[in-house]
Length: 219
Image (tube, rainbow, N blue to C red; front, side, top):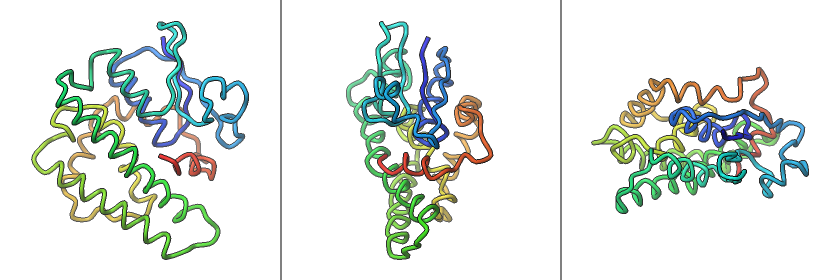
């Protein structure tokens, strides 16, 4: 059994999707970002960085894993799925995982905050992050030109990337002309486990809060 500590953000969805895809039994612990529950002493014992998601693997002496990319790799290694064993293929998946974590996540997170949440709209800043998101989406689109998934077979690279790219409208980013990206995104939507994963925790009417946006800033 795995304890999942999460909230309704793209980073949180990465892990809930993976757990659903891997059919692992887990217990949900919803973290209220609006009340800074992730900054409480109890949660900081799990993740000293005070961010979601995090997991506790009860089957492995309550082993704790935080940071979504690290959790995805841990779950893939635990099950022998979603991450190839061949060193070169494994490296390829991890490279694209890092592409999301170091590129799409941080840039789209900044676009979300400046485009949606800041009271003062700073056009040059908004444009800078939206343009960089578009550039990164174009990189991904080219990658998907001759393959169904980012690394040919469905992997944690797809799971990490889709929860962010699916929110392009919220970020004010145009994906017109990115046909490969759009096709891949629909393929992800067609996976029942992906849909289940983006509904963990259950949606709230006021899901998009400033606190959630701040969670997105550093990914």
